[in-house]
Image (tube, rainbow, N blue to C red; front, top):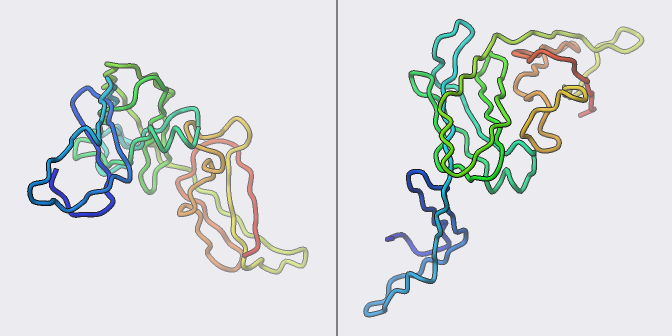
Length: 212
């Protein structure tokens, strides 16, 4: 592999195989006459799996440009870093595909798009050779929640950060501790103590207020 000198990441990808990766590989400038030793950095590709499908909008039509992620369902931070797949966007037909998923775990696929409630699908077991290509995630129009914070004297509360999280049993599958809060970009401070929460998933939530 020809690359600039420095610290690099080497990743190997092959059809039907789990990705293999080497971090912090030292790439040195080529020295004339020096014999290269490929055994110094060896990548072993193991059989992997595939998860694919499409995302639909509220009317049942393919939803383009939705964000889809696949993460280990056990919520382990280490597993998410090692085995989770980076977010990708659906194509014009609403389709997505995660190839080369590490076998031997269960995964949760999550689809989101601004203005719509998110949708999770899983846990999906992935073994060597798994090819799950029939997933269909339909995103519905989310609920709106509006409220106003005031003191006992009916004075608007200022400089407060609002956080919303599902109550016990509503934890987002496949996410690590602290990652199940409603996305902050859905919570809009309108001033005068007023807040608006958009595209909210159905359920029961706890509201936490923190002074800024």
